[in-house]
Length: 432
Image (cartoon, rainbow, N blue to C red; front, side):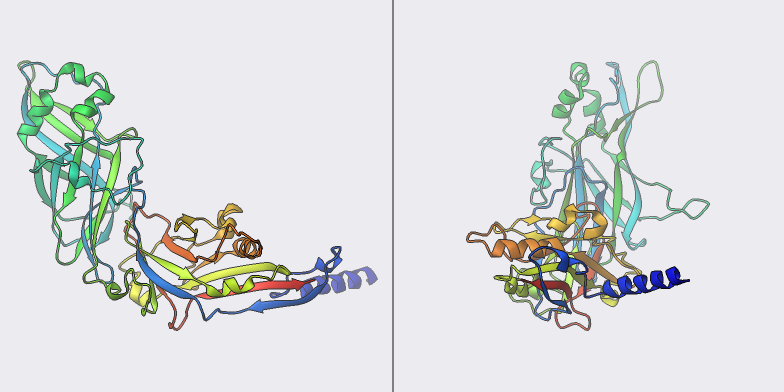
């Protein structure tokens, strides 16, 4: 019984010593360290935000190619297109007397962002300039500079969404576009020696560009599975009435997305790329769209404070669920908070190197927030700012979409002046 009572008392002492706001248990035992105070700093009222266009993201070899024209009630219009190489699965061995019957571009998709009642008009162009599989393409690259003057195919479709017998999203939808027979005859006429090697073939037939005509209202962006896309050429010869051959987009094909944004009607247009932001909301959009700059001037106040140990620093953003209209427009599963370097580039904070779950940024459905642990970054910032020539300065952060090149998801967050502004919570220990 005595042992049980002692154990309970010890457990109570340890539990009391580990309460939120005091994560310093045992630090007094370190040589030369004496705790003076432990603080829990609540919301920082001085957090500032601004809205920026998200320029020059990587758009090569995305998981999905977005296609279509979509008018977002908050973010304005987005037009999405892509270009890809089509490769030979094997040598086709066309006979000299082969004649074209028809040629069809087939593209598969599963995901839809927008409505399912707007008709989309798609135009297909042959590439006049080549794509490089090993190149890194940025969203600033204009694919329309390397396409033919006239489309080789045009068609319309209305996006459909179907599920399987168990109501699961496993059914591939297919867009089929008839291409001009003259293009099929061109493929039939390519010299046989130029079809023995795909590296040679893709310099002769460089690929296709597929884009959508802009819509003035509504619309949809569909997620094209490029690996399931193909050109099917139907033909006949003297010995066969009907033959077919498929040119495919493969894992070895260069594949580049293209996005155009028209923010004329966007809610944030007056504040876009402005140094002074009067908007109380924060906007995040993928597809080379919108990112937000987060400035926390108070972090610089920690300079000359080397006798502080940061126990925990957490930055939290609240979703504006009404403005986001998340039931119609699904929000990002995750955001990234990236440090801005002196050169204006984005890098992940030191906390992201510890573990993905520690760094966080995953949407919390329970309280409607995105939170980031920046403990290591703040400690590193304090250390650097106290050096004669610091390699790290308080340039702020960029809040960006985690999947910037292959999804249409976007979100609106609450910023300065909102009912739930950005929160910075810091637990720290001062010692001598």
